[in-house]
Length: 227
Image (cartoon, rainbow, N blue to C red; front, top):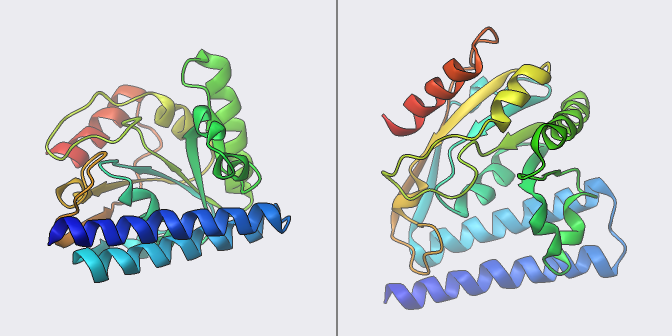
């Protein structure tokens, strides 16, 4: 039964995503606000389908810690579900994404117009500086910059060395940096077709101290993610 339920959810997920992406593209909705509204609608539809078909619910804690303006969220990443969660929870999310995603038909062309932030993971210091510059602009516009320090989806219970992009943002952007942990991989693993019923817990933690060194920041995040 669960494979059938998962099939129904995946149909809703990809079907609604395709329809909304085409709507934005074909009707010329390349304005930032229009794309963001469509993305948030997609997230709400998908989370509703995940709850109804698969019995997966999301329990978010610590949202009262969100500042009124822009900030940086250093989010643990175990599942594609994390994208839906932050799209639905944040008023103006701006995700840091690997530039290869721009190749995805239709969807990829909407990422930068929506204010998302591309990064060339093999581009070294120059790429990090470009990411920081765009993040500064996003924060100045009141947006919440979401970065996944693990760099990719990591199965629940597995540790991964954190990438240094979050340290560049913490040092280069004048905004609070809030870690966020999750156990989403328990219900929806990386590239997993079947979804397991039950709650997903997402916790937004207190901002980290600005005086932390790069090593101290990565150690702090690692403890929140894995301990």
